[in-house]
Length: 156
Image 1 (spheres, rainbow, N blue to C red):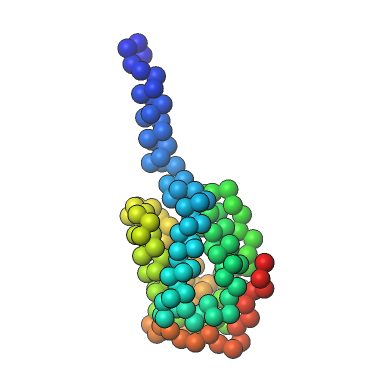
Image 2 (image 1 turned 180 degrees about the vertical axis):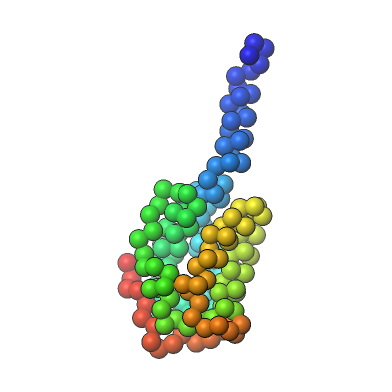
């Protein structure tokens, strides 16, 4: 060890920690996840392919629960306490096409935030299995109206 700077080891440990840290850390933590979730909500609200599905949704609740879920699922300190994906999407009539549009919007936001491909893939791999709990209509159609039977969760 003689002749080697101890700072070199600290620096190397920090570099390894950055690469091997939780997805939560690699995404930038709570502030970055919150900023990306807000940007996503804004984008989704303007996307005619999916925005009708949010017509009766309390957006403050949606943002908070989306942040909590992303934070928890990526290894952060948050706890998601919202409804299950099945409960929150029952009678929403989400199509496969709308789920795909949702994911495309998320990728666009991640690109805007300069999130690396590896982190994007890891995050998308966490979300893709939710398709079975969210999609109710096996169709590539997008922009379908929100069915009258849908009952949104109450505001927080």
